[in-house]
Image (cartoon, one colour):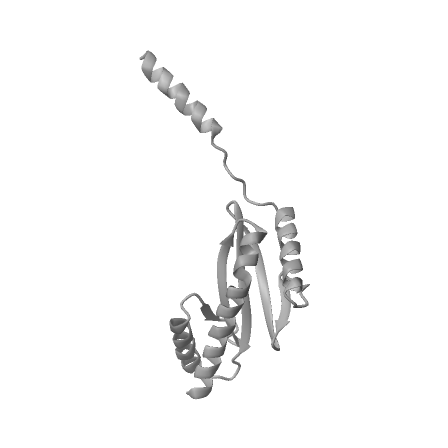
Length: 157
């Protein structure tokens, strides 16, 4: 019985020593966004915060957004762009999206609720701004390539 109590005390003590990382606060997310905006500016773009609190910038004539959300002990970051499809045949749109996503496996494409635009995005998990800096150019490449493939398929069909 004494050994059981000893083991129980040791188990409780070791559990107390394990630190549980807290979800980043709103202030942490704001600081992360500010750092991400600075980096985007260093990369040669002119970022602003839009009305939703997303980082917005233009690249080669297209608008892009970066969303940052607190997730577990880090941040869930999404880079996205929109392509207008108003008046297009939705079956054709879905076939073109399917083809684009199959060729660029890390991209995600979906129609907006109004079905007037296609969103092309890439998301990843970051624990630091260094993670963001490592992935940003690759994320832009994935999103822009998938968007271009979608447009090519729409024009070709």
